Image (cartoon, rainbow, N blue to C red; front, side):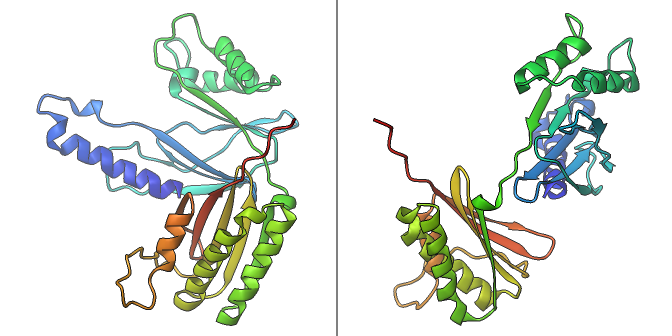
Length: 290
């Protein structure tokens, strides 16, 4: 989550500032930074953001309205011991999210408020491409030789429709593991991804079984087809899975190791209600047209 990531970065900067690699003659002012971190979910269209002393991002909705997303602004990285807070906003599909450094809006003869107003005006005239939009914003706000470093990042939000996502709520009963496998296999057939059925069945079986056996309800299975195939199993427990190498005579403990070996990558993320374990497989290569 963005607030947790900023807390880790803050701790890292504090350790760099106080550790031996900082050097005895380095002034403390050289250690520290502002940071804005955002995570966008194309399924829910929700964006989670947290700020460490950074300027608010600009949002341009498809109708051309420009506004700044108000965030609780935490301390810059490197002060240590102070909390960060994340907020969640639902963004319309096709919106533009602009992230930038203060060098874009603040200059020797222009205060921040004037610069933000100029940025709002520049973003109101969107170009078809993101690169052209960036060029127009930079041309309108910067002189030939800006006094400060400038970074500008503009991203366009997309949304995945129901045709790319399948979700099932599962009873906390081991008898329904087989049904979960069958539902996943049927969905892969509908997506013409039968080649991924064997590994997906194993992943579903292992993750759903673990959620039912060791976690708590509700249990949810979700398949996402985009650039890859993602299998997610969510439950209401915050206990992290333990990847271990089973001994010869162990009756269990091999499932998660198989998931790690057969998929491209896997991981876990905490949620507001528990955790989600996910595994990702590459999609089969499509044959080139003759």
